[in-house]
Amino acid sequence: MVYASSLVARSLNRLNLLGLFRVGYKLNILNHVFKIPIIENKEGLIYHLGVGEPYLLQVFRHLYEVKNYTFLDAGVNFGQTLLKIKAVDSDAAYIGFEPSGLCSYYTSHLIKVNKISNAKLIRCALSNNTGVLTLHAQSEGDTRATIIENSIELEEDIYQELVPVVPLDSLISIITEAGKDIILKIDVEGAEWLVLQGALQFIEGYRPIIVFENLPCQEDIDKKEQQKAITDFFNQIKYKLHVIDEGKSNLEKVSAIDNKEDYLKTNYLAVPEEQTSQFQMLT
Image 1 (cartoon, rainbow, N blue to C red):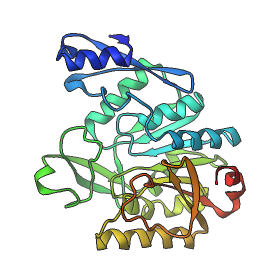
Image 2: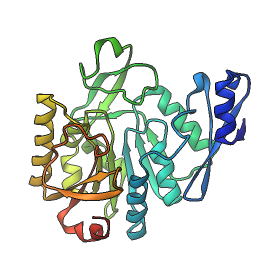
Image 3: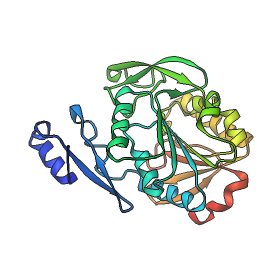
């Protein structure tokens, strides 16, 4: 495969010529250049054309300036966060959890072509119980795919895939070791409360920094109740909440998750009370 600029890849796509060539492109993140493969059905074309959520990248950069973290990534998608972490620290230990067959395949290929070391993938979704659930999506590889039934419109629920689900607590012995500092990122399209419920033992024992997405609730009563449950969860285990404001490029302390409609404030940072001092420069 030839790796050209993103401009060349986009131009070939507009001319409907991309399928005639084995062309990838290159992405520069913090002066680290990554090869971005484009596979069948043009998968990989759009998700790496730029660096999404740039302030989140700066948060990761600050964290790794302080400590050498192990990064656990619940919801790998096409490896967007993987590349951010490896741009910040190429030696960082990374373990990703991804239920989608296509996303897992693509990210494995991304790791291979870039010769990324110390990165592992586990093909499963994290939840509160062990079992098999249906992954609902608009298409194979849809980054909005979710294990939450009835959470997307019926007419958009076109692609389903049976996937294994496991609680993080059941994986403690194989994903980390005592004494390690850990960042847990949760981006699972509405299933974050299930992930947290299945990780209580892990969180209480390892006190990781947790970055999680929680989408605006609009007028959804169930979503509002979930936001309150997550807020109460972190209060009970003595974590402080911050919202990442991508619009203002800053970190704001909040007492509760209460986002009704702002899509620039969907990422949150939960920090153990005993570790909050290192975030003062970001707030």
